[in-house]
Every structure is written in structure tokens, then in C-alpha cells.
Image (cartoon, rainbow, N blue to C red; front, side):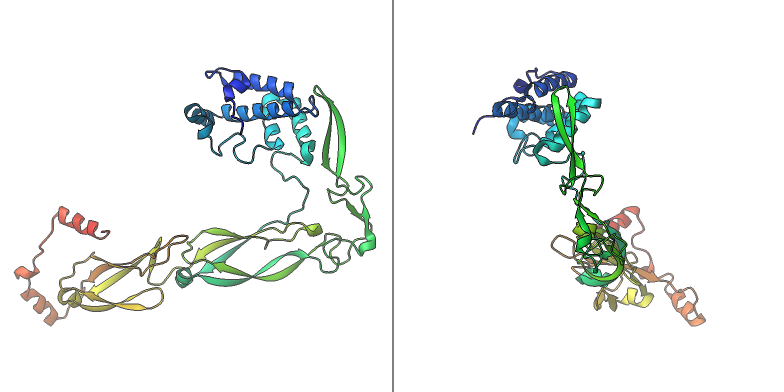
Amino acid sequence: MATKRDYYEVLEVSKSATIEEIKRAYRKKAIKYHPDKNKGNKEAEEKFKEAAEAYEVLSDTQKRQRYDRFGHSGMGNAGGFSGGGMSMDDIFANFGDIFGGHFGSAFRDFASSFGGGFYDGSSSRRNVPRGSNLRVKVHVTLKDVASGVEKKIKVNKLVTCSHCGGSGAKDSNCIKTCHTCNGSGVVTHTQRTFLGTMQTQSYCPTCNGSGKTITDKCEHCGGEGLVRAEEIIPINIPAGIENNMQFTVRGKGNAAPNGGIPGDLLVLIEEEEHPELIRDGSDLIYNLLLDLPTAVLGGTVEIPTVNSKVKVKIEKGTQPNKMLRLRNKGLPRLDSYGTGDLLVNIGVYIPENLSNDERKTFEQFHNSQNFQPKDNGTEGFFNKFKKMFD
């Protein structure tokens, strides 16, 4: 394999060259080795591509810094021909910046016909009609999130007309070859530029690139090839999905005319609130309010999970704000291994209204050392808070 030449050497500029100097050098090379001025000259074509590759890297500040530091080996897929190589569309895309105005347009027009592509800076090469996307909201519960679920939703959308098969014509005899483009779907224009005569192609304005025209329209779709209908679409909701996430179901949007590419269905997730559990990513939080006797004496309580209940032992003398962690009782992590935890935040209910007998009982404990706070310091509180997440 031939060794790549230094990019600065290719454009014949110094390593301290400014961006304007690099542009001028590339402009000079592009004009000299342009394929239209060197038809059939493979060497000129390679030099033309080589100059475009050099400019593509040196005109970008980040790529240039990486190239200056690591050379060709540091570029990877970040620029140049690395891998599959730059297309002619990619090369000509820079010309609007280099030549500007009218000449930039001329080069883009030339790129449209070079190699059979249609370059407009963003659109695809072929005039293939595409259906529009649809967006729906799907409600899920925590139970759905925990295990994943299939939802079937009814969507009102555009579908291919069954009577004309999407052609928009009354019958096959009503479909004629476009007289403007003779069925090719494109029209050719010739223009003169400073590089010589160039031919450009664009979509046929009569048939919009389809190559066909209709003499008598389908009565059911009015010549559109599409009708509105309801469709029930199954949607697989993956386990661990989160509220407000959006994903795409390919090809389930509106149909396109003339057998084009259907649009997509964009699914927005709306998660319903659980009556007892609070979600925090893959973890769940449950606020447990203990009665005073259980907090003092200890006992066993039931804690709700997504699918059932579990029994948890409460140690005697459990303090308010203590956090219990039930491992792997949370939700699965989306696109990764493992399951979150269920965090039980403990509170203690202090009675607000006492009977006379209850009041007398508590008054007996008022001066008892065992009922005096053992840790009121700030440091103790933060140590407890830290342990919640250990």
C-alpha cells in the first residue's frame, strides 16, 4: 500500500499556514486537477481527491491539532479517506465555502451528476417518497417496567390504497410514461462555467421523479394512493424503560405514495405513578411509618415490592430516618446487567392524642435514662445519613 503524503506537502503550505492560506492552496489544487478539466486522467483524479482529503482535515481546527500531534495514524475515522473513502458528494460539499456564491452552486450542481448522485447537502440520492412519522404516547406501570411488556395500540394512519395498490390510478391503463423526462424521473440541464460546460440533473417537475403520470385517478383515494385507516400495532416495551424516554418502531408510520418508504412510529413513554413506591432510576423508595411500640421493641413488617410483598425484620430501638436496603428488589437496568434496590426509609409515628392512662404511662418514662436522646450531635446525624448510601 502506498504511503500517504503529508497533508501540508499535498497543499504545498507550511505547518503554520493560516486557514485562509489553506483555502487558497486548496482552491488552486482543485481547479488544476478538477475531473472536468482532466477527463480520463486517473492521476489527476487521485490528486484531486488527495487535495480534498488534506483540506478536509487541515480546515478543521480539532482534526488539524490531532493530525499535527499524531499524523495519519491518529486520524482513525475522524477525517480524510479513512476506511471507505470520501465520496464525490463529500468532496464537493466543501466547494461552497472555498469558491462561494455562484461558483459554489456550480460545483454542487456538478456533484449532482458526478457518479449519478443528486447532491443537495442533506437529501438522499434518489427521489424515493417517504411517509411521515407518527408520534404516540404509551402508558406503563412499574410492573410493566419491571418485566417488560407488549402493548397493542390502535393508530389512525395513512395506508396504501387497496384498490389501486398505491399507484393513484383508476387502473393500469391510466398510468403513462412521463413525457417530460421519458420515464427517467430526472431532467438534464446544461450550463457553462469557468471550468467548461457542465451537465446537471434534477427531479422531473412533472412527475416528481417517479417517471409516471396518471390520466385517470383512483376514485377511492383521489389519486393520492393513500387512504386513512386504523391499524393495531404491537409494541414491545423493554424492561427498565424510564419515563419520557422515546424509541422508534421502524416502518409503522404513515405509508408513502407510489410504494415509497413508510414513516416511523415514535413512541413516548409515560410512566404511571405507583401508589406506594417512588422510582429513582433503577432503585425504588418506600417510606415506612412505624408505630412507636414497634420502633422501640422491634418486630416484623410487610414491605410492598413491584410484584408482591416481603417481610422485613425491624430491630428494637430503630431510629427515625434509618434506611434499609433490600438488594435486587428494585427495577432492571435498561441496556445493562443487574437490578436496582428497594430503599426503605423509616419514619416513626408519634401519637398526637393520648388518653389519661397513656399520658400517665409516658410520664413515668420522662426522667428515665433509657428515654433520653443518646445522639443529638450534628456529626452523628450526618454519619447516619452517609450510611444510607453505603
